Length: 421
Image (cartoon, rainbow, N blue to C red; front, side):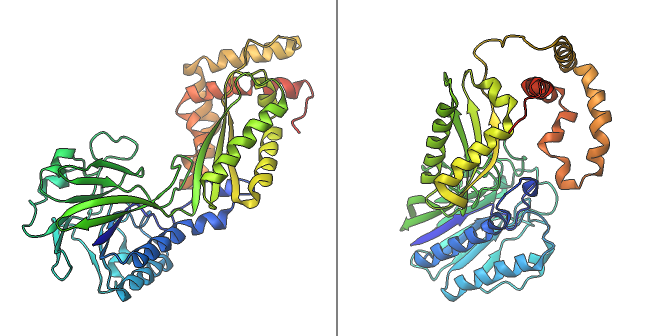
């Protein structure tokens, strides 16, 4: 018998700041979470699984668009026709979703209670299954829900479903925290976890404890293959848990080492090789790429002076390699110069750079200047843009210092009349 475990779907998750990127494939990326979900439903049907277990965060927030809920219902109906059961716990992102609560879900679908640990049993399967789980209530869940889960039900293959911050994870907000022994001492065969977007098998013995990761990467920090876990059972034990990639858009952070590169053709060729490998690894998917240039190279100042020219070069390479199937989200320069550059600037430019460096090094002086200059702008922005990385310098003068240092070559080039083309 088989079942599928998935979590953190975030249907129609808002793509923050995407519209700010010129040439971004907005429509393809907006459809990605729904298409990945459809791929998962296809997989369940093709593999003739008995159950689909969804461990929280179907939505990204209280969904104002009924079309999203209708889409979900129609996909669950496809499973109902194939007699595939669906068990859902709500996570922190969808606990207060009013539309789902009012939606007439098909008979095959069970949303577990948020009042206590719920139990659903399937006695008509080749192996009887007992699924234990508790949905989140609206508001932050700070208590250890796992502590209330009962011991395994005798004569059943027991599955625990939990949206949780298992001890040691700091990348996401802490909800329903627990430790591994809270799970491995219950006597269950499998724990279907959600909340952490990086897939990982945390234990295989005495039971399987699995984060499937999210179904579709949403930004440059969620890189690599994304999907669900296909679990195969034999009697009352788990024999395999295979991660199946279902993502439609694959995010990459590509580091291009320019160590000792001295001429622009070397830069171009190294970027070409890395972009080509990313395209190959994407297996025909749209690739969303953040390119990071690294290494100590004499090209550092040229890259800093002409960022637009470098980006245009990267865009042309991406088009040659994969047409519209590579989108360059950002090009970041983290190279360093081999030595301090010769100071051949005019006296006025030299004085300007001195003032910039002095200001950048004085956090106490810089903080109120940033707040005065950028605070009113942030206050007028929509909520989803207020946390833009560009505005984080208001609260962290260190970021402003780094930005000013990086801008030095561009300032010098501009004052010298060297255009970035």
